[in-house]
Image (tube, rainbow, N blue to C red; front, side, top):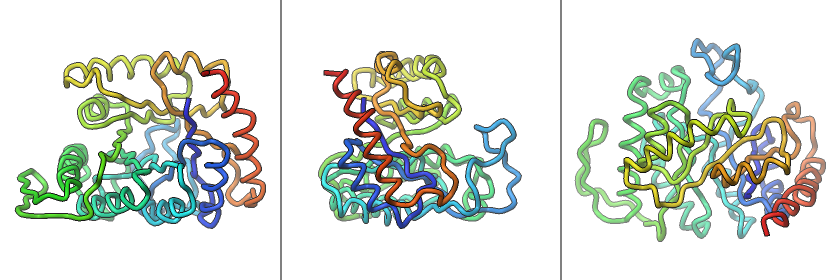
Length: 295
């Protein structure tokens, strides 16, 4: 089992040191949350809480994921980086492809794209994007960005983008892993067709919650002719990590677990020393134990 350190609600000025501590503790990766801006008045309901409220505060910090990743990649050598999750269709594919492709090359390909289609209409209004067509826009963006990452001249004709003779460098030297989030039929089909992994929503709090969507994913991957390809599954144990669940999760196909060694602390309640100590303790008591059990 591989562990991913979530940076949700971690102050931005802690990120660099936390990344160093996570690498030393044996984490596979760190994950950044993404919000374009805090919209104070929101009519759209968050789909994964009972009352539709957002599980973050106006005071929480959401740094630019590419700038933050570049800073952390510069002080680490093995640690990987992903987003959980990046609101892809609210952006443009050219800026994302350039930032992500540059990061991939400069970090020795230690970056993945973890994306979702988004849920907050107000965020799309802010960016001038069509909320209703965000799924189709995501599909086309993935197709176009993969073309751009080759470094070759790109011609593309689609619903959202129409380009001819466009070349973007630096080209990537190996494919950038793409992970898709969501639980709807459309999201699962998207993950099966276009992605190399799936990030379930945080509402799936037990391994049993994963059974039905994973079976659906397997069926869709067979339809897409991708049944034999590697496919990562990420999961967030909101109740905390339990060693006894490890075998069951691996049998389901779960490859990565998101972890917050400090749980959901109040904003700013931990100083940097306490946060790094929690990471070190998690590595010593959980990661090493899980790795020993897998041998």
